[in-house]
Structure formats: structure tokens, C-alpha cells
Image (cartoon, chains in turn green, orange):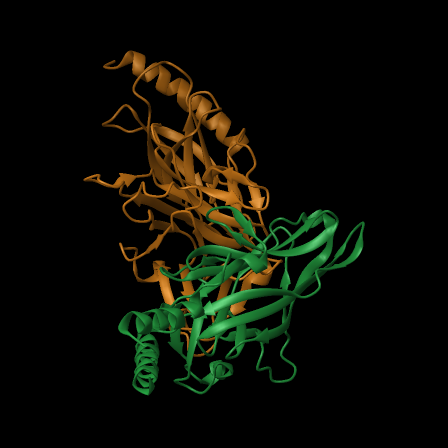
Length: 229
Length: 304
């Protein structure tokens, strides 16, 4: 195995984590997980608010940049692991270099719905846990979704038709995730509506140190192949 | 007589003044003014608007995101409804003494409360060299005004705080093309007149673009009972200055009244602010320089 081949191998390893064909990566700006009602059916989509572009969840990759790394303070936030546990968090207030991800029911007419809609966590496939929470007026966490779930944690949030909300989105390990939600609500004319399970794709990008480890590991693997030849 | 003409219209004005004060003294809204739109539970942003080539290139409006309508500050009242009242718990010295009341509009939506943010949505990308800033410049209120955020692990960041004086630290940047939500705190019920100044630097410009100061009114409920009307009397002309009317105000003790003046009962200009005391309070009002038109006075309690 020669040097260009090793380089190509490393590039392949690196890119396999990041690139998903025909999928648009969204890594910054204000984006909503949107609930819409079109052709008499409730749907879930990804709404790029800044460019006003709508994607099917299968066509968008929600990227969690390395700057999202933070450490659990423990205490009331122990659902993120004991103090010092690393997590990758998209925060509920706009932060440079990080996706500002909300949950939007802005396309829905409040007059069409009885009460609020519900966005429920269906399942999470990935290398770690997924958490969705908010912080109340006095700094206490309100946990809405937790895939590592202690019993009794509600796995859902209310979505007000015509409005939107911001949350903290946390992942306990870098890598690729498929986070599956379903949305439901009661339409005044059409009755109960549900989207059924819809998978959203997240990519949690590790911080540079982890990249460096991956590169060194790949090179070692390459060298081992090269020596074996 | 040294100033026969002036004196004639002073006397006429004074007569009118006494007449009108009996009819108009008191009340909370200047007559003829449109009632303000109450924003109570909507998603509303303080939105920075850039309008190049006009006399107000930069200005601040209240954007009702639900109705997709922009309001000028003088046309709205931002209502902090009674469920906003909470008690400060232990361990938040930034917010105040434990056990004290605090009215909070939260940064996450509560359908019973106004959902208030700061927005630069609609601002063109690349025009400003950094996001325009919304600065706090004045708070006229029975209490203090605070704006803060919590990060994802509950660490508090204070953006505006009128308790420690108002200085350049009391500022929120309006993200170009984006918006943010905040906690808005009021340490008392009553009316809060909060004045902001928007400032931005166009890319390549040497100086900042400044917006006119914009005062928004918050009504923190339950509102205290409206103070009783004040009685106004004109008791004479100042001995030294013939354009100074000497007036007397009797009203609810400790309540600040704004004296308003008009030539036509339609347009009212702001005169002095007078705080009523146990005995009638004397104050001066300057008469306008020109014209022999009638001159009217009235006093209104806050909000002006």
C-alpha cells in the first residue's frame, strides 16, 4: 500500500463520518424542526429559517459542531451524567458557529387545532444518548426527552400552533444519530392527526483532539497494512 | 403698561386654562389619542428595522409574530399578565433578595404570557459590520427592569439591569437575520416606560448609525388603582417674567403628574412633571412666544 493509497484511506475514514450523499448539511443559523399541515396531512420537516428553505428530514443533516462540547455540572443537571461528563449541546440561545435549532408550529393556523400539538420522541439510534431540555426562570432544568430515560420522564414537548420554541439539544457522544419523532394533534375539522415516526439525522462532530486520534489510528492501521504486504 | 399685547393673551390664556383644567384634569390617556394595542400572550419581538434612504434609517418596533404586524412603540402596551408574578428563590443574588416578588416573562413560551424576544430578522446580510445593538437608556417605573438568559446548564447571564444604574453594559445585540429569547424581569407591578436606543455600524462606515430613542410601555399587572385626578389653578403671572404662568396643582400625595399644554386641544406638548403633596404645589409654565391664541393646560397622572 503506497502513500497516496493511505491518504485516500484516511480521507475515506474521515469523510464517511461526515458525508451522506444527496443530504444537505446544516451547521449554523436558525433552523426549526417544523410541523406542517398540507394536503390534509400532518408532516414533519426541517425548516432553514434564514434561507426559508424546507427539507424533508431524509434530505437534511443537522450538524453539531465541535464547539458544542461542554461538561455536565452535575447536581440538577445529572441527567447529563456526573459532573465533568462531556456532552455536545446545541443551545437554546443563538451561539456563533452552532446550529440554533428550534421546534416550530408556525405554519399551523391556531384556529385549525384544538389545543397544542405534541412532538414525541419515538426512538434514538446512535453511539450515545439524546436529551432535550430547557432551563426555567430560576436556572432549573426542565427535561423533556431523554433516550437513556429514567422512568417517568416525559418523552415529548408541546408545540403551540402558530408559534415556535427553543430548546437545548444534547448528545452524549460524537457520531451519527437517527432521532425519530412523531407529531400529533387534533384538527378541528379532520379530527386526530399524526405523522407516524419520522427520522431526523444528526451528526455530532468530535473536537479536534478526537480527530487527531482518529487520524493517528488510521495511519497506524495503514502502516500495519503496508508492513503486512 | 410695558407689554400690553402679551399681557392681553396671557390673561385670556389663563382664563382658558382654569376653565379647561376643571374638565380635563386627571385621566390616563390624552384625549384624541388612539387606544394602545394590548399585546398579552403573543410571540412579540423588539425588532430592529433598517430602512436605507429614509429619515429614520434604523428604528425599533414591536413585531407581533403571530399577526405578522409591526407596531410603533407609541401604539402598543406590552402586558405582563398576573401569572408572571413569582417569588425569588434562594441562591439568585443576581435577581434579588429571596422572597421578594418578581414578574417574569420567560424565554420559553408560556401560553398565558407574552413571549418576548429581540430580533434582527429582516436585516440584510453583510450590510452591518456587526449585529446592531439595542441599548437600555432609561427606565421610568416604580421598580427595576432586568433582562437575562440562562445557558444550557443554568448559568445566568445578565444583559440589562437598571438596579446598578444604566450604562453601556446594558445591551443586547440583535442577530442579523435571527432572533433570541430572554427572561424579562420587573420588580414591581405598575407601568414601566423603558427606553431603548438602537445603534449599528454599517460595513465600511466610520461612525455608528443611531436610531431615535424609543420608549416602550410595559403594564405589569395587577395595575395599582389609577390615582385620582388633579385639580389645576392658574394663580397669576410671575412678577419678573411675563411669559411665566404661576399654577397650582392639588392631587394624590406622592403621585407624579405630567402637565400638558396645548393651543388647540388636539396637539398636547409635555410641560413640567409635578409631584403632588399634602398642600397645593406651585409651579411655572412657560407660555409660547408667538401668537394670540388661547392656551390650555391639563395634568395627567402616569402613564403619560
